[in-house]
Each structure stands twice: as structure tokens, then as C-alpha cells.
Image (cartoon, rainbow, N blue to C red; front, side, top):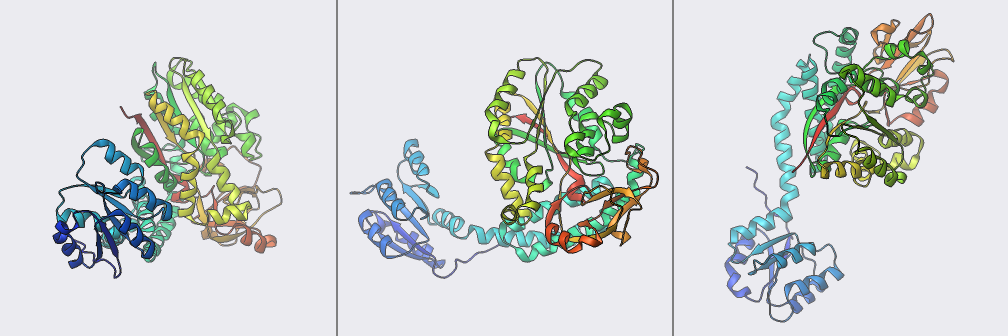
Length: 525
């Protein structure tokens, strides 16, 4: 049990026309270290507030002369951020609503006990410190077991369990301001990335042969989650491109107001990049199968725009293959929120078709992640994981995606929401030697005579079947970065280090890129 003493100097102003009857309450607060000034009317209270700074004001609503709400209004003009607790004998809803509407911290109805008042005061003035101490104690108690779980992880469920817990601890500790313990979480995450990379290299080729113990992969999502929900009612299938698990954690509270969320995970296929992972979702097939059946769609350019130009047709074909019938699909790929009204209008029109699948791809998170490497301003705004989460939430709260999903909830439609891959904050360069025709990506490269200077920084194979990629040229090597490495050429070492160190990149092998959320959203009644 955490006991929290107020820091010296915490000052409270209590304004009540019956202040003489509240002496036990005042003494109770003072005995616990608070400095309490008591005043019996609003005018004197306003003068005191002009002369002194108070951490909290306890304000009686029903007083002779100026009523509490009138005092509050004047107070807000001079100090919009003053913390106030309204205290009143009235239990009428309109009084409470008006007080809350004027941003009071809490609302107490007389008679109140000293213990009730202390509880409210402590929550407001000491709550953040108490939460900080509690999360530190919780993590300290969990640390030994978490380290053991990380060291013993050897199955998909093991890695998912440890990774998701580390993400949650990172968020809790960051919010509590426990920067010292954040370093401990990062250290465990570094160890997890290293073990995860070794484990993926060992097992991934067997996953591509549909080994029984393989995890849920990109190719499984439509079959396992979308098809069972098809019927006479519309179903939404929403993909937020390049969304990390912690970014999902940032936006999920917004959606929880409208939906019941059932969360699980899937593993993005390699490379963890849009041309491969997202095509696999919409087609239910690996890249080699897509290229074999539709060679005109796969030009081997590795260009994300051209290789992802047929997602709607891939989804239509997959649904027909799985159901034996033509399933109506309305597909939209949204790069900007400027045309949000038109998107919503088209979606609402498509909803008139019975049993339609509303397939929506939102590219903002991916564009933000890529743009961050090119923009010094965006790099500063989203300087680390916490800032990227905040920026993601700020976008989502005002986005077309959220607007469409809120309308889906109000209309009673179910939603499947996921992403194609995540991204990782890259810190370490890995020098690679390659011909000029090698692909340009920083987390994966294909080319002839391709190798990493330090072999432990990348997964290397010459067999495209290990990745289920289309057959390449003779002597082709496939190189995929591990942990938080990014590829640089010897001739551009300084340039690439300066430009891409501390960038969020994707395409490689890490929990952040491969273990991504898959959520079923059921509208709240």
C-alpha cells in the first residue's frame, strides 16, 4: 500500500459561508500536511486568489452574495487553469452539469466527511505521484518474471506475450514519468529483438511451407476473420497501413467508446513492407503465387505504388475462392483526409448493397512514418515512440478513418481492423556491399553479389522459396535487416547515418514490425 505525503507548500483555499462548522475538516487536512486558508465569501476569496497562488480551491456553490458558480466564472477569467472542487447542498442535476461544464475537477455534495474531502484532495493533488510510485512498484515486482519469460520465449505465443507486455510497460512508465525504469524496459526489448530474430530465421522457411506450428500470418486474415462474418449485413474491413502495436494502444481508447474490442495479433510476412504484407492480406496468397497467376501485376520493381494497385481485385478473387460466390466489395484507398466527406458519402452509398464488404485502406500512418525521415520538422515532432503515439492519436481523433468508424458503430455494423506491418526506430547502421541494381530499401535488399559486412545484422538467403518470393535473377541474394539495423553503402556511410539514424523504418525482422494487432470491433448497444 502506497502512502503519499503532500509536498511542502501545497496550498488549499476553502470558500464556504459556513466555514466555522468545517473546522474538523480543516484540521484533518492540516494534520496531513496541507496548508489551508478558509474564507466565508466569494469576494474575499477572489481577493485572496489575486494575491496568492493556490493548488486547489474548494468552493461552496450556495453562498450569500456571489454564488459559487459566479465566483468560478470570474476566477476562470484570471486563471483558466485553477483547480476547483465544487461543494454544494444541491443534488439537482442542472447544478452538477453546470459545474462540470465549467471544468471543475470534482463535485461534492454536503454533508461531507473529512475522509471524503481528503480522498478528493489527495486524488487531485497527489494522484500523479501516487500513480508514479505504484507503477514503479508494479514493474519492480514483475521484472524478474518478465526477464525469465523473455529468455525462455520459443513459440509464437511466447513472443507475443512478452512483446505486448513490454509495450504496455513502456506506455505506463512513460506516462508516469519513470524514465529510469524505461531504460530497463528498453534493455529487455533489445534482448527480445535479438532472440526474436534468431527464432524467426530458424522457423520462417517452415512457415512458408505451412508448418502446423506456424503463427497466424498475413495470408490468413480474410479467411479466418472476415469470411465468418459475411452475411446479409455489411462488414467493414479496415487496414491502417504501418501501424505499430503501441500506436494501436494510443487510438484504441477512442474506439472503445463506440465498440467492444476483441484484440488478437498476427505476424506480418517478410519483408514487412506494403508490396508483400498488404498484398498477402488482400489476396490470401504469398507473393510467388500472385506473380505466378498474375505476372502482369508483378513487375519486380519493388515499387509500392505499382505493386499495390490491385488490392480490390485480389480481395474480390479471394472472397470468391473462399465462399464460392461473388461477394460485393466497396474498396477505398485513402491518402488524405481532405476528401473525407466524399469518402463517407461513397461508403454510405455502398452500404445499400446487401452483404457488402467495405474495404478501406488508410495510408496516413505510413506516409507519416516515411515523411518523418525526410522532414526535420516532423522528425522533431515525432522524435521517439511516445511522440509518435501522440501524433498518431492526434491524427486519428480528427481523421476520416475515425469518422467512418463512428458512423459504422452508430449504424450497428461490425468491423475487422488491422494493419499490414509495423515499424521500428532504427539506431544502428549495417554496411552492405551490393551492385547498383540492388533494391533501395533500408531494411531489406535484393540483388546479386549482395552481402552484409557483419553477417549477424541481417538474415541472408539465396533461396527465394524461403520467403515465397517470385524467382529472381541468377545469383540473387535476399537480405533482411535484424533488430534495429538499417542498411548503408560504404560510399554513402556518413550521409545515410546522418539521414536515417533514429528513423522509423520497416521491412525487416523485429517484433515491432512483425507482431501487429488484429481487432474485431462490435458496436456498443
